[in-house]
Length: 325
Image (cartoon, rainbow, N blue to C red):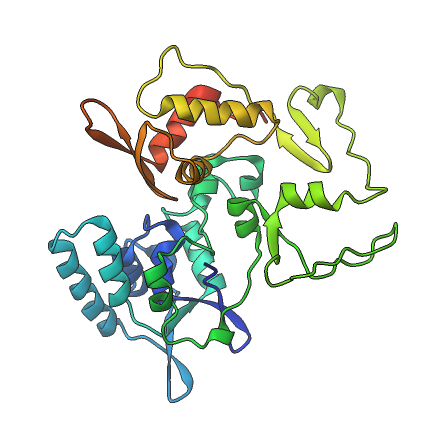
């Protein structure tokens, strides 16, 4: 679900969507305290939230955030299951209110929750999994029953398609327009149903277009040949895979997933990739998958244990080491 909206020609994000951008790593309570300018959220000190009053955008006063925070704390004390907590807290956040996308991204990326305290955002393209997992997701997996709640107070035409570097990295998707510009070799590729095919996986596009006279793959210097695999016009960092001496918990399906990617010459899967794959085709060792967040796996006598993104990243690193530079 894309959550970027247009407010008077400027990109914005609804307040109710903000916790979903990080799969609730930066939860509703964090959102409210950051917008109330609590001291521990120092990078957000100049970020304001807005809502329309008399057809004019007006900043939301701090006292309003204090009321929201009190309501959220009551939900926390109720000790609801995670899904119920996310549902209730989303509804507490003010409808029809927003932050400017550029301001929020800048503040979040520079915060303790964002990628900038690990690596610069540009280095995410170098397969830095820790930084990659900290990027906000502008097309998060919002439950169906909350999609209308998240966009409450906004007109349908305000929502817009957003294909940023963040989207491309997180989803490995690329825009597929109704008609591609004419190429130097001539011709254009038409799409019969643009509404159904505005976005498609990179691999599908490369396989189905099969454009003639495509540019030759870049030549990799000999000293880099052992560190890079050139596939078409894309460069993939090489990585190694080591099979564990024995499998425990979810490590066997994890290894098989990594092995398939390694054999295919693909980039090393991230923790989010693993969760997405397990959610699509759930292995028997997995009890439950919360896509973009964590998984529960069986240990003994039907009991389960949770592995979050950090634990999955560590398991991946244990089998593969760091990607070569």
